[in-house]
Image (cartoon, rainbow over all chains, first blue to last red; front, side, top):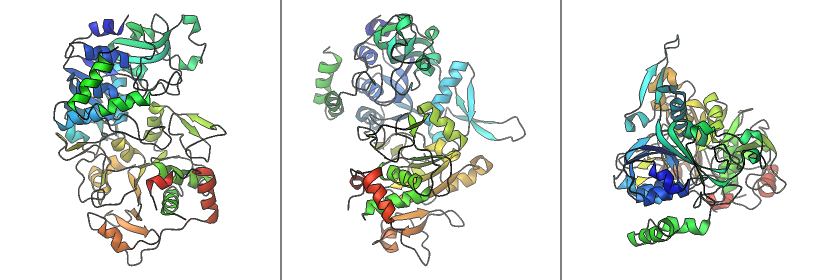
Length: 274
Length: 248
């Protein structure tokens, strides 16, 4: 498949999960195909970075479901300093998108609940915070056991489609990550009706473990409905160990939020240009 | 001895007595302080590499001799630790109030914020599941403010209202570039625990947007020992990254 083939199977109004994490291993070629399409009014579930930033800037996002959106994360051991996501901020501050906030662990639980086909999973997370004020979808549930504890019932985050990017995959959708972290890609796919996976390179099934061990074989092909070979497909984010984030390109991206002209320039070069 | 070194020691002291749990300080000086605690008086602490592993190294930021891995800890596994309670996190705060409520999500009306920040991130889950402290590299009345716009991290007044559901809640300290603050008061209002050398309690109050509890005798923050200075300068942070966070 091509990225355009994947997007051809998406429809306006869908709930789409996007894999990766912040500025790491995001399926950016699939996102770019989405930007070029007429699909809109999306509910986007993401550990967010430039994926949702770009979709906001292009007016594709109806609702953001997230715990954070940042082009990098706080931490002195990162190569980059923490940076808030400029296009997402603009959209939020202009009141252009609906907001469905969670704690990041709750997003894990919501995807897990959807994958396990249960309506919610209980957690203490959220109690006492303003999440229950800012996210009216959240309700509490009382333990039926002797403790009778009141807990948050984290609702299943069911996805119409999931988009992820992995390092290596076979043509059937078996796939491995080669960096240190699977992020939540396998859960995104398991929570979705349809899963679409791009990868740096398609290899024979027998070669999937050539560069790693069995522990990295996380993607269940029964959750994958389309595979795209997309070398550099995470560009604008990192895809360790294949490549780091392209800082020059990322700088252009960050600057693209500064004016309409800068955005048009980024659109014509990065979105339309390739 | 720099103010950054004093802050690192103050952070280290937050972890004293924690034993074999994950010390998870976020920020440059917090990372230095956590490493310092483990290298001296709290050897059983576990610490991350800031990525997907727990490592045994004393170096905070660069590992020229390689990382010594103790645990594979991808993002999803962090919740296993958080929800087990075997963790003491030190988070940042764009706003923190007198009961330790913290905001990192948005400034202004949440529905249409004046400034969108990071989002709730992990603050709600952290504060009701494991011990939490805060690091404020620039102590101002805007950060230490009377009322936070959005409660991400749960403070003591909210925890009291929760009752038993907040049984794992503890906000231990707030370390800033001026002072160490805690909540060891009858109603858990923030108090000055110590002032960094050269800072007066009045200056700390002046830089705070609410009334602090100020004991009659406010001690100075403990100064680093020679061994602590050696560890900070030669092992933990030889490039002096901590000075970028709290300049002299």
